[in-house]
Amino acid sequence: MKSATFPVEMEPGLQEVSENVLSRHLNSFADNDLETLMSDYTDESVLITPDATYAGIKAIREFFVELIKHFPKGATSLDLDKLVIIDELIFITWHAKTPVVEVPFATDTFVVKKGKIFRQTFAGELKFLN
Image 1: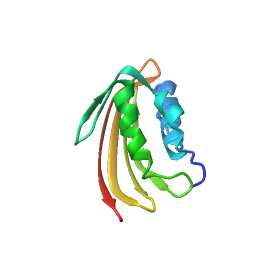
Image 2 (image 1 turned 120 degrees about the horizontal axis):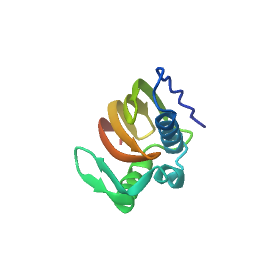
Image 3 (image 1 turned 90 degrees about the horizontal axis):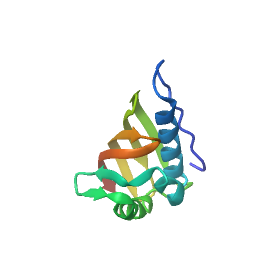
Image 4 (image 1 turned 45 degrees about the horizontal axis):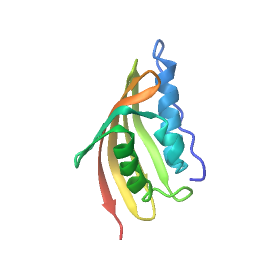
């Protein structure tokens, strides 16, 4: 996948800012653009995964530095399976395949405040191929 654009279908009345945050987040992840990806977070942001809780920019950056290595730009297929946006709440399920990892199922939930990801959860099944 050289460059990804993830269309976001919104129901009437849902906040455009949440759509913009999600689109920027997914596209910067697919492009391995760590700086743009991190611009979605603040020092008050919290990311919760099954393995750890990451609070603040520094900790969340460390998580993504390690994760993004397994999703190389141009060699990753990532597809959204479900998307729900209700005001500041975003729920997605997705699957992906890269040269080093297969993700048959993953899910993220985001709470967006003032155009930034305030809270996020992530869980997924990552099957490393090597």
